[in-house]
Image (tube, one colour):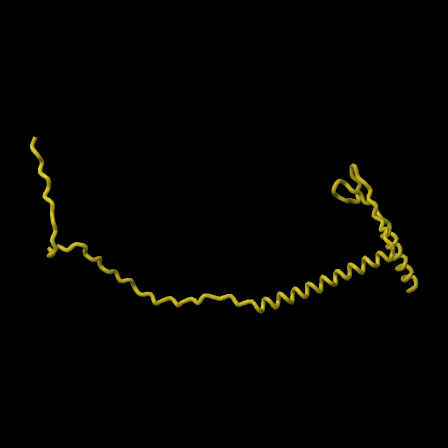
Length: 133
């Protein structure tokens, strides 16, 4: 019974791989790429013409670039953490306590002119008299 299950599972896997390797044509329609045919479509060759060694070198280069990027990100995050610790704390304004509110006292306006005569000399000009015609 186990042998039958194993055989069925193996056949299913290999048929899945066979269909995955079959490529559907890719069409270039104006500025877009699609797997459906459109007017004035151009078939694009999607076969990978690189050798197996070239593919291995390209994969190694991509892994190296990803590793370098992760290292640089760690360095940047570490530098940011240090700069945040060294940054001066923002100064907060000390709020003065509000003084006790007392009721307002209204003062009288000072008198501008007093009715009493002062000792100061004041000159007066007599009114002009009308001349008879």
